[in-house]
Length: 608
Image 1 (cartoon, rainbow, N blue to C red):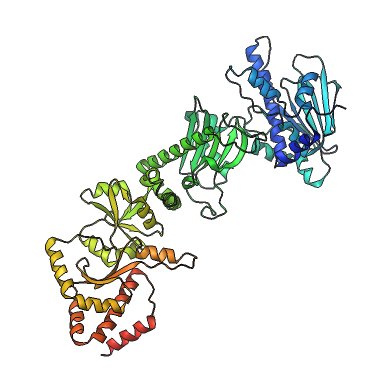
Image 2 (image 1 turned 45 degrees about the vertical axis):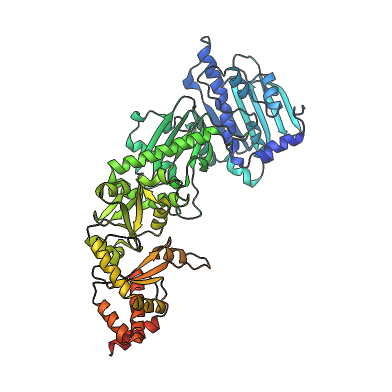
């Protein structure tokens, strides 16, 4: 028996026990090596016309022998000589595929999967013994390489008739490894990891009547085919089969990049959010392949959080993988692919918005919150990327519109007006909104808790700032109206001061911006009433208070009543102040701190 040509037996233990975290990938590694062996022979047949090789004959065969607990993976590739068996398998981390690629790196059309020379040793995670029987193409002799692990290996002559390689794994005799002797389990692993290997992977299926070979893999992935040759039904079928979604996607994005960076991608925009999408359990990411071999089930680095709803696959031969091919090494290639994918998704959504508005509305209903979160969570840094995807309900159009559509519909306005509440119907009833609508102003009715936070961090759109119509800085009065209002407030300063002292507000004043309602609440500063409600609903011990102003409609009969009370009964005026403030809070959807006191005051007034 010969010892492995490595610095220590510990290296072998490392290969088996530490580098690979998932035992089932042994089959992926061995099939990838078999594919490489066929690739080498196929490549030689293209460069050496003397070799009469029919590509259609290439195949990888898998056989199960439950009686002897063996799993055999065979290929009719280039095979190995005695020296190659010792060199490639006797020296850990020696890769024949890497050498082949280096020798031919100036030549095109070489797709060799295995480069590190350690994938073969993953077999020892599930096998107590590994036997490799190989016959090099054109050779008359064949040899076998046998090892039971770290102790070493034996190489001896064999009588294999056909060129190629057979790898015979004696599966460990423990219950947890029995799954690797079941055809349904192996089929599942092949479909998961090696479905797009270039050559047929055939499994020997034995039943009572006959033994037959069944092709398991799909061979050519959909994303590598020409787009013009793929029907919409094929795209949708691939999506439902791959991602287990019973509903058709809203759109697919099929791209192919060539040149300095090569990759294929097939992405889908779902028509609905999955049951766990807006939960902590949801895991974003695209399936990542390298030369048709699955590397990662969900590669999160390929897609930003705000597009995390996108499902799909990316396949590139240019990725730098670690030696186990289980993880990516962070590099420029990955970032470039991710940036390109982000642009493709944005373009596809903009196209859907322009050309298929009904589909875009479905998308917005399902994932609009995620787009908003993309702006807010980045403190506005992603505004330029995402702002044109946003939609808000327009009071004038009575439907969802984009910010650009709002601007186009209201060219004369110097600002973008909005108001916030629990629903569009509720927002329309707000006194400030009712007054603005009566003046033919278009208001964005923001009924989602995140809306105002998003608009705050955006600051502006196309040089127009956002203005909350419920804030104190809305100025639509004429100079004459302003002067009249100023005079009223100045002459009523003592009355308003008394009212302010009785309730918890920054200021009490008369206003001209209300139509029929007697009062409303406005705010000063960055925190609005709606933001106060949202922030106080969060599970924290902190309480947030907006700086509120009680505004009284100077055209309402209540003004005369207040003035009379100030002259004749200031104690009664204090009661009216509390009622008006409670009324304004109720309109805004805010709680009343002392409902018993308010109801008693109302009853006292009613019985007089």
